[in-house]
Amino acid sequence: MTTQPWPIDYLKPRSATYHLAPRTTAGTVSTSGFTQRVSVPIHAWLITYEDILVYSEEQIRVWDAYEAYLDGGATPILVPLVGYALGANALAVGSFPVGATVMTVYRPDAPVISGNHFTVGERLYRSFGTTDLGGHNYSFSFRPPLRDAIPSGLAISFDMLHVRCRLASDDEMTLKQTPGRYGTATVRFVEDPNTD
Image 1: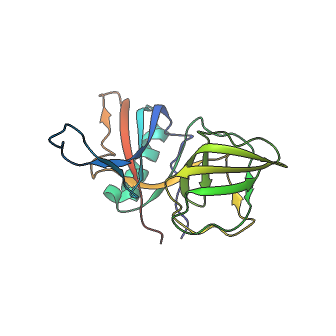
Image 2: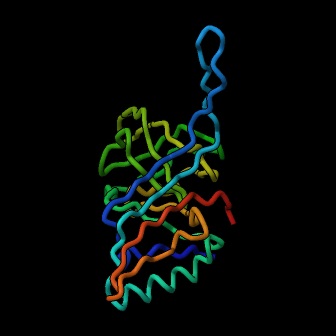
């Protein structure tokens, strides 16, 4: 089943945040005053679309249709990253298992730079610690760990970025409207951990 994308052409936020959390957990403070922090393998994208203007009849119909479709978070949706498209895509050099956090890609049209976002299927990742291996090959670390295995030669998208999410709570699609049918909304999403 194909996951439906958020209707960004109709319901575009004025601002958006993309947060990868949680990353660490901490124990209690010891008697010497130190706290041990441990990185945990559980990462999830938290995305907030703020100040979505809903003012035309068509936008209201689209909003209402998506509110019904998302069913309070029961149905997943592809949430695009607004303003992050970099244009050039890449190919995986080698195979990478579920849980991998380092990858090598061939990207002839642009370098991979730390902080780049990329999409594999319906999953979103963020790169860091990039090394130019020469010949348009780049090795880099990324988070979160791979959700699905990547075979050699698979296309890695640095364009048209998105992530499979669900509504963060049942009431995320509540639209506050003025009597003239003008409304604004903020919607929060959380990455969908399911792979179905």
